[in-house]
Length: 164
View 1 (cartoon, rainbow, N blue to C red):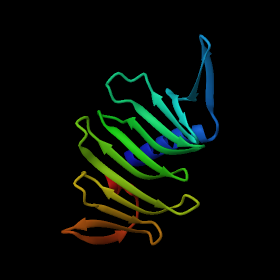
View 2: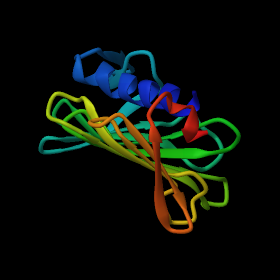
View 3: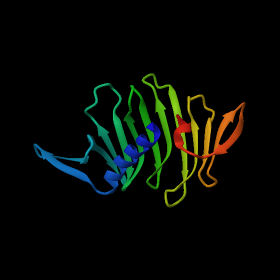
View 4: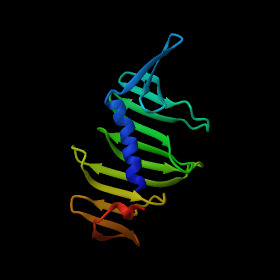
């Protein structure tokens, strides 16, 4: 499933930095700090905040990650098919994911509510970027809801394939 794979990838990038898997190199007396396994390079620091940017992209929109200490707060990176994906995090867990096309039009959004241990409780999905939630997953009661004429219709939560 595309959503699950992307969430794992974005959490993975932020986890690499959180685990301290950064790499320091020195070229011509200039030290650089990167996140191992990525092309993200530290470009700015202010207090507890660090900004990492992938400077290797040539399409004018740079991928970036903002950290507060070891916690990733925002991650923007290019996805498949000329999309840009922005994820906002709280306490290491993704809260909001927005996918946009190359013209900056919203394609879809996913809002996650996790408990303090990171277990999914509720997920809202706007599948087509129209601003209305199309899917509601209630993991606490194992229920799936979809929007029909601005009302929620319920069914058992069997798989996340309904997000497609």
